[in-house]
Each structure stands twice: as structure tokens, then as C-alpha cells.
Length: 129
Image (cartoon, rainbow, N blue to C red; front, side, top):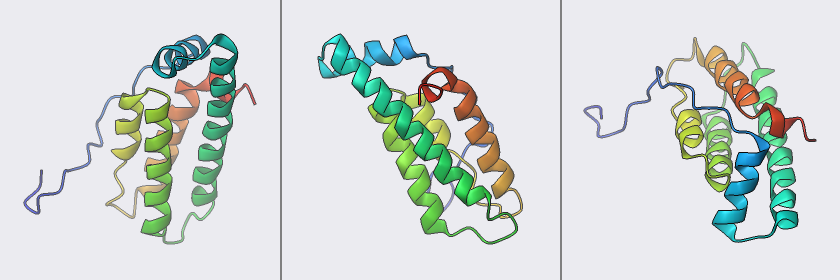
């Protein structure tokens, strides 16, 4: 924590392990006590949500050279946090919310780096849509 009592963002946090369709499917079956068909629907919904999350990030990245609204960025990070928690991916939730947003000179690179890791880490799931 810093002197103001706020938790510092960890820019060196390791990238979490990739998540495949089977892992996510099994998470939904166990966590939500659903059958295979319902788990498949939840996996497909997760795929759509991941794509929407990445699209929202791309929208922010298109503003390169402009000041990013902290409200817009916080909404994006909160959306990612919730999505990953629902998917049972606490490490990914922490990774996304640890995005270093304090330096305006590196914010675009930081967002791009994290979103590339999300694309790689969930590639099988993202490609479902």
C-alpha cells in the first residue's frame, strides 16, 4: 500500500495461465450445478462477453493521443473484473485490474499489452463467436 492507504498497482504481475473451453465448461458445471447443455450456453455467453470486452478496449485504444476518461477506463476494468470472476478466473480478474493506469504516457501501451494477453489466454473461447 502507498502512504495514502491505496493499494499500488503491480505492473510486473505475471500473466495468468490460458483458459480453454473444457476448463471453463467444467467450471460452470461445478460452480453453478448445471448440465452439459446449460454449461455450453454459459461458455458461449462468455465468448460473446469476452469479445464485447475486447471491443470496448479497442474503442478506448482508438483514442490514442487523446486523454482517456478515468470513468471510461474504470468501467472497462470493472467489466473485465466481473466477467473473469463469473468465469472462475480470479487470477485474470486481478491481472486486468492491476493495469497500471497512473502514467498517461504509457496508458495506451499498458491497455494494449493486457488485452493482447487476454486474447492469447482465452483464444479458444474467443474464437467460438
